[in-house]
Each structure stands twice: as C-alpha cells, then as structure tokens.
Length: 253
Image (cartoon, rainbow, N blue to C red):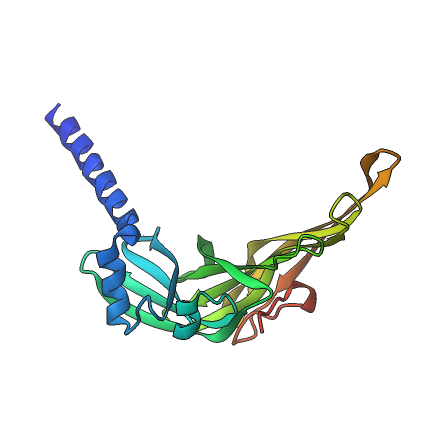
C-alpha cells in the first residue's frame, strides 16, 4: 500500500513539474531574463513563439523577431525581421544558446502574421532531432487572397538551418467578392525515410493540390469545377541543406 502511494505521489509530482515547465513561457520574468541575456528587448521586436521542448522538459526555445525599433514603435507592419532562436534552461532561467537565422524576412504587403515552433519528431539522424519553425504569411486582399506557410528545420547544436523555406501550405485565388471565384490550395506533409545522403535521412514530401471554381448559375452560386492532384517528391541532403524543387519552395525576400 505504501509503495503504491509513493508511486502515485511520484507520478503526481512529475506531472505538476511538467505543467510548471510547460507554462514557464507565459512568465514575464523568464522571457525578460532570457531576452536580457541575449542583449535583446521588446522595444526591438516581438516574441514570435516560446515552447518547452518535449524531449527535454528543462529546456525551452524562444523565437524573437528582431525588427526596426522605429517601425515597431509607430506600429508600422511593413518591415524586415531577423529571427533569433534562443535556447534556455527553464530551471536556472539561463540562456544556453543563441542562433540567428541567416535569412531576413520581409513583412509588408504579404505580412508575416504567425510564427510557430514545430516540435514534431524530425529525426534527421539517429542522434539529431531537428527543430521545426513554421512561418505564415498572408495578404489582406479579399478578392485576390494569397497566403502560405513555410517550414524551416534547424540543427541548433551545429548552428545550421538544414531545410529552408519549404512551402507546406498555400492558398490563393481570384473572386468578384460575391460568388465567381477560382481558388487553388496546396498542402504538404513531411515523411522521414530510411534512406540517406551525406549522413541525413531523406524526406518525402507528399503534396495534395486542389483547384475549385464557383459561378453564378441562374440564382445560385454553384461549384462548377473541383480537381484534385497528388504528387510526392524526395528531398536529399547535399552536405549543406536539403535541395527543394521550385514548386515547393517559398522565400520571403
């Protein structure tokens, strides 16, 4: 009975500890401390996302969007961001690693409106679980909507971005604001394969594309076309990064 009680209490304490770490990104003293150690401040940009790493509960990753302080102060959405990936010890509130993405991301007519840390198991080597980052962009047009999400993968131990700007979601179209519309969407998923090149597992990208058209017919708005297409492509590591075909590549200049 005593052993059972100890096991229950141990499991309860472990759960409470995990929840405490999971919520640490919401604590200002944690984020403020990590930013200060990285010589960054909220006057210079924004916290895009922050998550405790599932494989290391005492580690958190914080994404900071460094922008133009004057543009941030004025609320101007049109600017260029540099992404800082900050790895921190959640127990000691200590900055452990500071990596700067070499790409500059422009947010203007097509606005960078969301950044999400992707903690899926991107096991690119037996000893390497890459960190994913999904960046979403969209314009504000209702008659010519355009939005996409791209995926980056990082080897933070080696300070390398190994997958750059893989377009995993795309939505675009033209419409008259009422019914007549031609829409195109594309969604891709990533599958880790057993084959490898230059020591990194190959990635199979499965893509589903959908084209739809709507027209006024008499008094009703009806779908007049719906075409679905599926295809896949294998990405191979060339020693520096994964080579992406043009139709799957997205870059925010």
